[in-house]
Image (cartoon, rainbow, N blue to C red; front, side, top):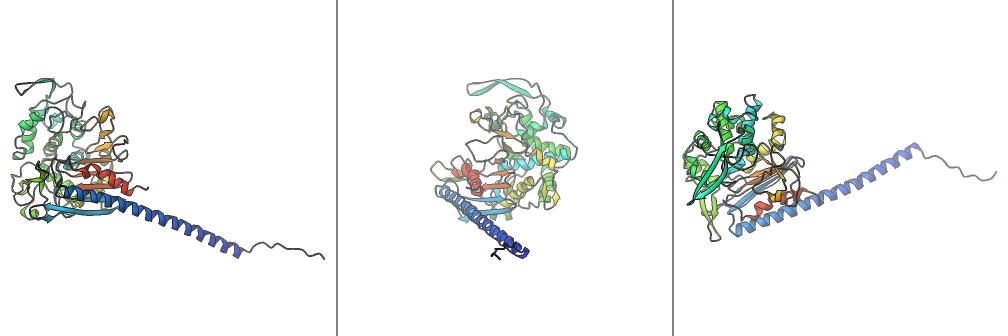
Length: 436
């Protein structure tokens, strides 16, 4: 018989062994690539954060700031929490990651939530007229012409065609005169020579006597409206604004370091507030000692626009709650639909919610509580939907809901236009977590 070659089918055992080896090989390659990607991401993270920290040191060495601290949170964990320089230059007391700093306007999102909680309770609606709760605002007058005579402002006004609504308070569309925007800053400052000497009732009553800069809802001027919203909280809830914030927000979140005013025992952690001295140095505006107005002052003006003091991690707690649709450690602090209002642009697209018009790009909107990126531009790496704000005393923060990214940067210098790290902070943090 001729010799014949017989081709046998591989055994089932052989097939299984082969498949196992192939799967292991694929997993091994996948793990290798995954490990390489993770190593590259960590390298990118560290390189960008190190570069940002070097810029902080330059700002300290250049006496633009005395010290600073920052926090980066990404996808459920704190990636970096670090402090630099001094909380107080005179005593060389070092800045700590848990140092107390003045939030200034970073108070506004917390105060905004306070008013929104009353809507959640069914007691108010954001489309309600303001004068329903504060009758002194019943007949606003709009400035239609402005001039000066021997240095004195001459204003021509007419009755507003539309009422001020609660929503206008939270989006800075009421038209109130302001030291931070518009052309009537001198009128505002003349009305409040010492804003800290009186309560929210006095503040609101005085503001109601002044004309407004534009028809309610038809412009955007960053101003004092959150103090008026805080007074509405008092009228509707029947308790002082500070007590409402404590009971409904700070206590449930465990934000024990966040306060409107401080005790003497808090002085050891309070950062000194500085200003440029005009000679490439810094001078004290408010000391980080028992002499601070936060400790020894009158303690009567509980400002929702800018009165709170906090720490990085305390403020992060509030930001994470916003990121997590109102939930904190399994407890619902606010309903998801309430938080959604704080993440959704509430300003007409024809209005740019920014100090300048940015070349009429209309790139920034305003939610109930936050500035929001409407469209991405080459001015920043912040992506569409990122919410943020800052404080006049230096601090700044942002929340990127899509990336689950939060950055908070604090120092205490006012004004702060000379501080480069404040302008670049968000971009450094975003670059740190984005893949190359």
